[in-house]
Image (tube, rainbow, N blue to C red):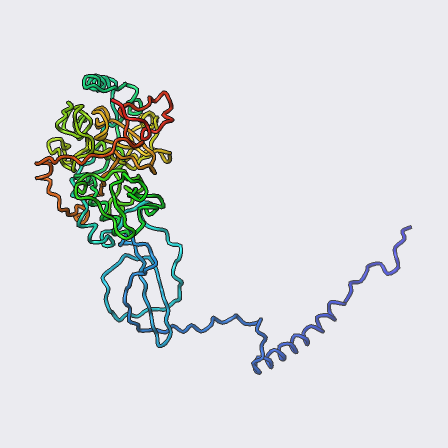
Length: 472
């Protein structure tokens, strides 16, 4: 016998039926309500997309006159900032953007005006140490700067060899001097470099030119007006200095006017070159101009000749410099005078005794500029107060850039080709040195006389060559 629950099968609930019956009337009522709201125009904002604001573009006709912003650097004229002043009715708006300079014109154009502040942090264009542009150089400095000659670029060999140094030592001994091979230690080894073409001044800068430069710069310039350092001494600082300063003007005696300026600091030389739109040569450029393609040991060739340069040989040679260009037959292959003797010349490179070794190990350099820092600056060419050994085109010397060495001067170079930089001077290279005048005696007793025999490299050169006593 089997037992089952009373009722047998469980019946389903009818709740969903009642829900459906209630939903249909509710939906109908909701549609009626929404229709009424739409008809009244009161739909909440979140039910509708946000419309874009009305854009009104007003075309303004303005008169635009390009002008150069005076606050921007003037190093590269083609990279100036143009200032355009737009004046719709009474409102002025300045818009600035980098653009090449074009010829100014008064043209009616249509622009959309947008206020943009002028940039205040635009980086200067060009190298950190850059010469002045030709249009900013005082006319008097353009008129007095030296003529230049073109020096072609290319791959050149710098430095010397043991064989060449041995021959130079023998010549020095033969002429009554005292020289050692160790003096050329910093000129080893010979190595190749690449140099671009440039323009070199034919003559060393003269007292006449330098005094004109000081007068253009103004009173007391010589004290600290060359990159913040002294340029040169006057008789106010050193009684045996040749330049006179009366508190207002600088002057030089007639006898020294055509002589190379001496006692000028490195900074005094650098600032002069920049003031006339030029620069100091690099050591590589200087050697290129002196040696030419055949790698000559002296500007005129490979054999020393006392009649072609002003040194302290022969022994009876009067002390002191000669007027620039007094040895026309001793000019370099390219036509630059006094690249041996007269005064040693500042170049832009810092000095390092081991620089040539480092340079040779690094491979061929493109326009080398020397060590990045140092305490001494390189000198080239020897002087009136040294034996010919120091006047070889490969020989390196050095001195304190703030010193007033009586045997040190300089010449400038420029980057070609630029007619503005080839410049005009009253000097006529065809007649320079035809009549060699008697030199003006110069004091040799001061402590800045150039040594004939400098300390050897093994002594770490703790004594500056500019303060050693003269010998030989």
